[in-house]
Amino acid sequence: MRIEYTTKLIMQEDLHSLYEILGWNSFLRLNQEQLAKAMEQSWYVIYAYDGEKLVATGRVVSDGII
Image (cartoon, rainbow, N blue to C red; front, side, top):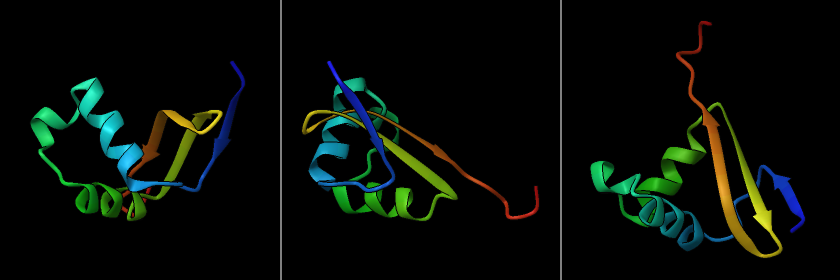
């Protein structure tokens, strides 16, 4: 396994699938476009890929002050 990190989301479907598989979207109930927009509006986002497969993501949200 070779994990590569990027700030670019390759496919919205992959992000939505990851959230569904991990159960993160059971509370949020976001569609692909809403989830992608939330990530775009984050202060910082990182995606981890194993080859072409999205395996993890993290994001930082900010109030713009601290």
